[in-house]
Every structure is written in structure tokens, then in C-alpha cells.
Length: 520
Image (tube, rainbow, N blue to C red; front, side):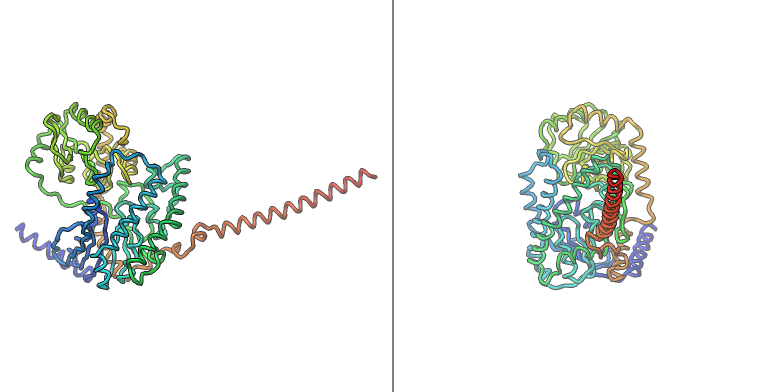
């Protein structure tokens, strides 16, 4: 009966896919070397293929995925992972100094320029460009890679952006979404939504500096890359502001509520998949954790084995004091004298672990995917941000009362122990995590289905230009009403000038009259 039922569901899925949208040719361009990014991006592209579409994905990862219905072709960015691994050997993120916001802009732009040029210059991408194939839609992973957006025009497809985080200054201006620095914290600033005056002041300065740097420095360099590697390409400005859809990997349960124009769609949690069975050793370990368990992972891009000795010892000493068991994603064989309540491995099935009822706490780097998964399974967190958007996610966990934040450079044995004790023993953290889990799960449609629907919608309605807001047709001074305010201030200035003249004239007449009276 179960087999028959599965076959029935499969046929419903197949028929629904055919009825929903005819097969489309879709190109996905995702050059980021971080596996956490690829997990999200490939999940989207695989589901599009399963829905019956002809999918091509450009990325550094090879899987040879066989879809249930459509087709799935990989164009591999060979050498990217090897080059990234070499750079990672020379960089220890734990020892990185604290960057101020302006230096962070420079660093992110530099990475973006290098990644974009290497992608377009890659021989496999050049072969695709030379093939002059046509695609109905081109999905680009949004990360300081504006030249890649020109591929949509070149291949004749509608431009769709996938943002691995929510709305931000990096993407808002491309679709005319309001992004006032008074209530929209910049990702790299890590402020709460309700900012103090000082925070609003600094947030505004950062926003202004960021936009000036993008317009005067970053965009011209991206435009040069676009014209160098893509023949007969459109100008970057035309490519940038021709976005049909933005898929935001965010949701109100894990990020601050924000305004979105009609072409921006929240799909946070779309990558959450049905749970697999835990390996028996892990299942037994968690089942036998009668006092509870902690899961500790710093993600796919940061290796715990590279921790400085003092920080590693702080974690070991704290875990030794606990009655809870610990699962620690650690990339080397653990030492023989490590505490008996710690189990390590280079990789753990994260979602399956977070779903186990004995897990009481997730110590995380605060990556967005990890935060989403923690919220989905109702697990409170201690966020130890290392770089990027992780600080913002940590602030949100703390302000949302489903976690605590701990700066990496400030870790000591005592403040780590006190935070663990607070999370485990104060009920509000678990209660708030459960509430947010309900919010994330209570959706009118599964976020993956929503993503597929809107991609097909954009293709069906030839770019869905009816979703574009009028602000995209305005110049920057019109958008900020400088021409209107300028005229108003000019009018006020003229009125003040006239009143001053009248006042001077009347005052002079009165003074002359008084002088004449004195003479008499």
C-alpha cells in the first residue's frame, strides 16, 4: 500500500509540474566557493529540474545529480575549490583583526571583483558564452558580482537574483526597494532595528559611504569586466536595473521585518528537507544523553581545529564542567585526554541532530542557514560570529530572546560557561525558540513551492514587468526628492529674501521719519 501511495503522489507531482508551467531553460550562476551557499543554491536548481525544467548550473561543485523529471547540467568552475583551499591555509579567521566597516566594504568589493573576473574568464564559462545558447531565465547568486547580471541580457533570459540573506542595501536599490538607514541596519554594522541616535548616525554614514564607493569605484570596474569577457554586452546600468525577481532567503521569524516591493519574495527555510535517519551511533549517543546535549559547529567555512590554544582550552574546560553531552564538529581526531562527554566528527547531519528532542542548545557561528535551521527546530543558540552577516544574525538572536551573542575575541571560560548555564536553565530561550519555530512553519505555502511558483510566473509573464516600481525610472536626485525639496527651499529662500527687503525698507522709512521729527 505504501508503494502504491508513493507512486500516486509521484504522478500527482509530475502532472502538477506539467500543468503549472511548460519546461523552461534556466541557467543558474553561483560561483561562491562556500559550501553553505552551494547547499542553498543547488537545492533550488535541483527542485526546478525535478519540476520538469531544463536546468544548467555554473558552480565549483560537481554532484552529477539525476532529476526525477527534467534535465540537470553542470558547468564546473574547475580550480575554484583548490584555489580557495590554498588561500584558506594562509588565513586563520580566528586570528583576523576586527575590521571597521569601511575596510570591510573594501575587502568585500575586492573579493567580489576577483570572483567575478575569475568566473567570466573561466574556460568552461567562455565555452558557454561562445555557444550562444538561449535561456528563459538566468538566476544569479547575489554577492558583489554585478557583471554576472549582464549574462541575462546576453542569453536572452529574465534576470532573477537569489540573496542568501534578506533584503539589504546590496540588493534593495536594484529593484527600488525602500532602504532608509533610519530603520534598516546595514549587514556589516550589526545594529538592532530600534537603533539609538549614535547607531542611526553611524548607520547613515556607512550607507552613504557604501553607495558612493559602489557608484564611483566598484560599478565601473564591474562594467569593465563585463565588456571584457561578454561580447556585445549591455551596459552595466541597464543590466543592474532589469531585475525581474529577487528571492530572499529570509523570514520574519529569523530577521527584522522589512519593506519589500512586489518582485521581492521571502523564501527563508526553503532548503529544509525531510529528515533522514541518524546513523545508529549518533542516535544512541543522543538517546542516552539523559541530561541533554549541546551541538557545537562553526559551519563549513570555519574549522574548529584552527582555534588558538587558549580558546580551545576554554571550550574544553567548560564542557568538562557540564553534565550535558556535546557533539562538536571538529576536523581532526580529538585528543585522548578530552572530556568523555564530547563526541567529535568532521561532519554531522545538522538538521537531524537539531531535530532530536534531547538537544538543548546549538553553539553556532551564526551563519544564516544555521540560524534558520535552529529556529525551524526550536533550538536556542549561542552565536559566536566570525565574519560577514553572522554578527547581524547574532544580534537578532539576542534581541529576539531565543539566543545569546558572544564575541569571538571576548571568549573566556567564565563568560562561555555562564551563557551556557543561562540558555539551558532559563526557560524563556527555549520558549521563544519554539514560538519562532511555529512562526516559520506556519506558512500559506512551502517556501520552496513559493520560489518555484514565482520563477515560473516571471517566465510565464515575460519578465513580469508589471511588478516593477516607478522609482526605477527616476534618477537619484528625483528619487530622494532633491528637485522638489530644492524648489521648496528656493521658494522659502525667496520669500525670506523678499520679507527681509520689505523689513529693511519699512525700517529705513520709519527711521527716516523719526530723524525728521527730531530735526523739527
